[in-house]
Length: 169
Image (cartoon, rainbow, N blue to C red; front, top):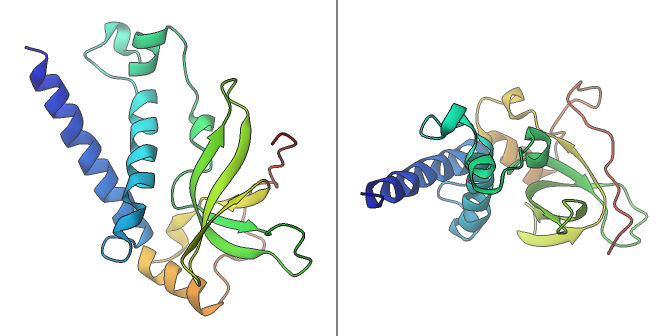
């Protein structure tokens, strides 16, 4: 009886993962980033209310009794990330947020970012994010601008978050 629920959840995760990859422009570009998109989809589904649970509570709340927050998803998979590597004194690099790494208490430890020029994945302690994907007609165009070194977002964009810093690690 519960098998159909598991199968439905798997199909839902696949659909959201495919949508995330397409939105960012990765559908055919980098299949190796699929696990990051799947992890983001899983985290989002865990926080969304679900009608099969009592009072339409989220899956997490039904499982653990604790509520989640949308802020736990930020920065979300595919957000534009501005970051520096190590003690690099040059300007910030532009990349794509893949995941946020947290400790057991939910505190941010670091971020995983893709450098679209070198296609290298970096773990950084501090970054600034812009989650406004709608400024470009397609994710592929945004990715193309990143790879060519063009401006990705207007500097005065209202969606630009303050730099998030982590002291731990």
